[in-house]
Image (cartoon, rainbow, N blue to C red; front, side, top):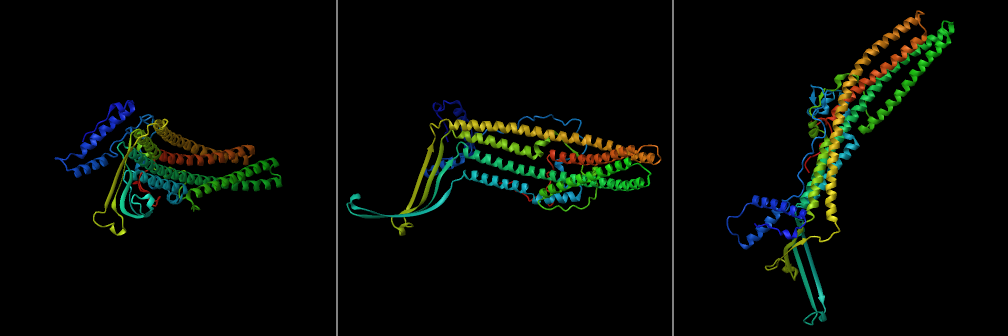
Length: 517
């Protein structure tokens, strides 16, 4: 098979480079198809030519080859990364989260959450769009049957006599099937495929975000439950102190100023309980929205401050994020789709070849459709190439190239954001652990201080103001310690999400979504 082109028709350098690239691809395809050892008859040559045209259709691609941009982040996490721990990609969420109640809530959210359902429907939307583009590579074959009967007056007939003519036809036909010599249709198909794969990665990102939100909300609820319990205990003790001081004032054993100070502490405890209850209700409503149903929370079997609620994670290498983090995977697929659109825009500069044909029977009478000699066929190839379009094709190519550059920038930004998320989570886990340790010692010290201040007051060695200050500081430190413990666990959840989560299929999790279009 001989393939050639006239350089006089390709004075534009871009056209020449494109055609040269096509000629190389076409020769490669022709070589892969092999050659017949001997001459073919005329019918065989026609069939071979049509087969070769179909083979070459879509074989050439003008899309730029995909290359990952250089990693715009350092090669290591720094001193914040622990040396030991299981990799996030190796553990599923149902293994990472130890609390059985939390696992049940996550499973329920993966089944009923509306945002996750919308993400799954977007996958089906992208799948259908891909199948539409893929169908363009194949001819559309249909069956048709038509008949006509007409009366022609004598003055319009060469014979001068009135004539009645009939025509009937039945056949199969293909209309305007584009032979994709330049890879335009194939590039559009590839772009749709990458968009589908990006939507699948986006679905996983939504699922991972949902798991993170449920875990964070659950931990916030458990934190508030513990803080409410502590505030309730404080309120109970201050209520008893208020009763005692009222009795002392009645018998003249203490001043009214001390009673007012005790009342202030009691009111502060009541206010704190009301604030915590309001926050607890808001978090419960947030969890209900995430689950898509009313949550059923039993009393926690473990305290949210226990560090064994989550497994220890190792961040691995920054390059691992490229394979594990779903938003990075989605951004890379979008980059590939943008490259494929460049191939389609480049192919628009070349002629578009289409075939239209039909095969069937035709006859002047309905009964003669299936008699011998009634075979009818038509074959109509067409070639079209706009000569002047006001620069629309050039602008389309420029648009595709600019969008690819945007996709590169978005891909790099996504990697940098992911790198920061991991570093923030590692730093939070490191320093929050230090804060928990400090606050634990401070709580013990403040508890002892409050006890000694009360003892000094009872013995007349100190004013009641000293007791008030010690009790206020004790309550504040107790609340801060609970908050720090929850923040430490939240940092572990954030680290799991920042590393891309696990790849294991969850038990009782979201319905599986096929990755095949």
